[in-house]
Image 1: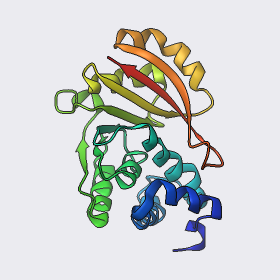
Image 2 (image 1 turned 180 degrees about the vertical axis):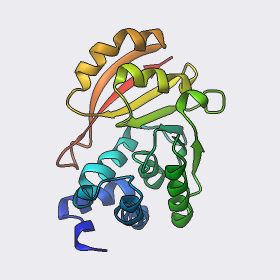
Image 3 (image 1 turned 120 degrees about the vertical axis):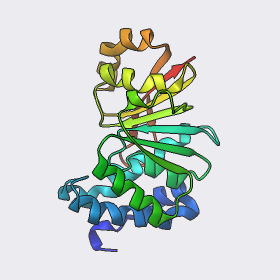
Image 4 (image 1 turned 30 degrees about the horizontal axis):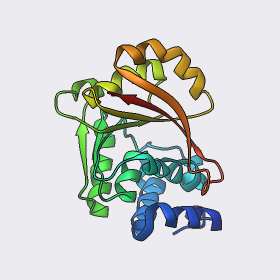
Length: 213
């Protein structure tokens, strides 16, 4: 592993807590991100030094809000953030990665095969095309769209029961206020901003959780 991909002492503690005995798989995933992921344009080269802190740990930590053996649909998976992170952190979860771009789907499938992950499937298409074939307990999304639009793409995949877990930044509360009517119309019963990973991450993850049903 190159120097840029090494973990700090704090990151190591967080990674060990999140990934446990699957940490080596997480490290191999990060190597994929830093090599073929950059080469194929899934991430910019400037992201390499912060792959662990800003991307992988930031995404994987949301596993703590998910029940055991749940089905999870990750919308707009791209480089597998957060979908692949969750599949590595939690072998009990069943992940469906929904991604419209073929080149990204090919990359995701290659990484899944290399890591030997058996709890994750890649489906090429847009979220709205997957409503009839995906029924998830949780839907995740990161850097896909503002909540006003994202709600309509994701909540139907829950089929009236479950939670949207959207990784967001400091504008989370503002996004919620703008999307309140759309969320309610789609069946959202409770919407809140959560800060996840405060005890183990230098920069905790902010998520919007919308409960449906």
